[in-house]
Amino acid sequence: MKNQVIPRSPWTFIPTLYFAEGVPYIIINTVSVIFYKKMGLENAQISFWTSLLYLPWVIKMFWAPLVDTYSTKRNWVIYTQVAMMGCLSCVAFSFQLPHFFIISLLFLTIGAFISATHDIAADGFYLLALNQEQQAFFAGIRSVFYRLAIIFGSGVLVVLAGQLEVRLQNISLSWTLAIGLSALLFALLFSFHWFILPSVELPLEQEPKSVTEKIYFWSVIDSYFRQEHIRSILAFILLYRLGEAMLGKIASPFLLEQRELGGLGLSTSDLGLAYGTLGIISLIVGGIIGGILISKYGLRKSIWPLALAVHLPNLFYVYMAYVQPSNELVYLLVALDQFGYGLGFTAFSVYLMYISRGEYKTSHFAISTGLMALGMMLPGLISGYIQQLVGYQMFFILVFLATIPGMVTLFFIPLES
Image 1 (cartoon, rainbow, N blue to C red):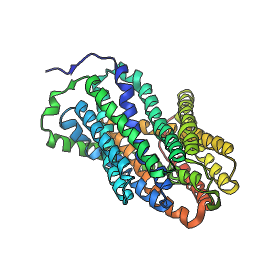
Image 2 (cartoon, rainbow, N blue to C red):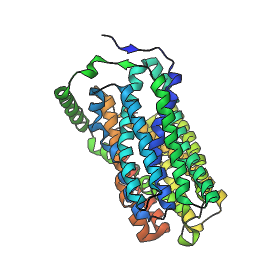
Image 3 (spheres, one colour):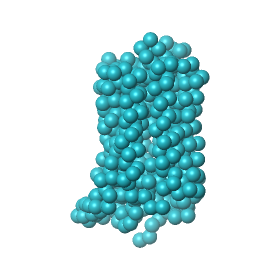
Image 4 (cartoon, rainbow, N blue to C red):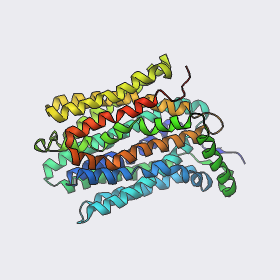
């Protein structure tokens, strides 16, 4: 039996598929920090629990074979979108309950596992539904719509919540409506994909492959950790974004914190504009330029300046913590920081692809991205406690110093000319 694919232009489903992939990720890992801060939780509590939400993306490789073995990628995509609609609805409703933190965190955790599973299914569906030429063409398209989802989550939803806060004078109700809107969005996405996604059926998906999958899985793991210079590679993956991992969970609380408490006193809408809109656009532009530079000069020549571009702007937060500048300057500095992050993260991503070679290159890349998520999760767990212990000013100095180990690893990682 041959693969059965209903002819349909990828333009009809790739943009919405990857938009659906980005929205829950940004809500769970970034927007959650914002609404918990607005609802009065302490930075240490916020950073610890929201950092744990990275865990499903760290370990998703362990249940990826289940997605390959049972049912179809199309079914996994549709059913995870239905489940995500339910999770986001529960998160929105939980804000009206007395013990909202525990309840919302529970559903965010479930949502994180669902979102990670959706990522596996969506990427697998992409490989099955598109031929190689289409895959190459739509690689940039799917990235654009994933970034638009980030702008929607950290920009549009946050600005909306901020405007509702002003009009309703009720923070919890404002976030119920904002997150409820994202749940409604997933109802629309599920309905759309139910009718639009082409059917891609593989007979092998219906056959039990437990023994084969186990052998394959451990072969992949063994081959990855037997690479030359694996210790240097692991150090690079875990340490390159150490400063950014610490900063990521505290940046939004710092921007929202009242000025008399050491923050910048931005409103929720201001934060959505600065970080979730202007910042993300700058990040996208930085990513594009980073890709152009690497394409022109090669990774070996580009990685040092691009690494500096992602790390040096952390000094902007030191400056803002000491000076507490006007909102206009804050917008500019946040945008420049995100532009540099876009440059530097592109180099990081290209290097992960560079070391993912050979027979298991796709699986090796998945392992690398899982380790990358681990490198973001672990520092985030303690960043809030450190900030509360030393204050914002000293914390951002420590963030800058935390960039040094990642820079040192550049001397040791394997990198051909």
